[in-house]
Length: 121
Image (tube, rainbow, N blue to C red; front, side):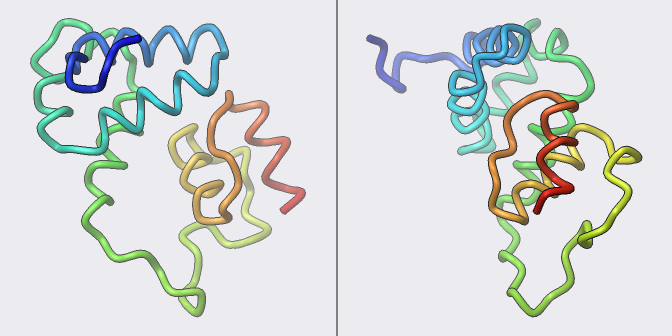
């Protein structure tokens, strides 16, 4: 077992990519959480060759989570970024994840599984 203090953001990028490609959602979620918990982790990850291998969807999700980390959460009375009844098929994977997050449903999984989950909520 490796402690969080022994992990490098470059290695966590590799774990994130492996979790994404293999469908190990818990690994993906933990790696994403580690990277986005601290902007320094993202900065260090960006400096590694492994960051570019993540691809545009994962990179966009990482940067979105970090940029939204300091913002206050929306109150229940505020409109959702993606209102109920939105055309989910037109949204990117990162947007689908945000739509799930604002509905407090799991946001891990591939595009097909998120599309299947959203209309039912």
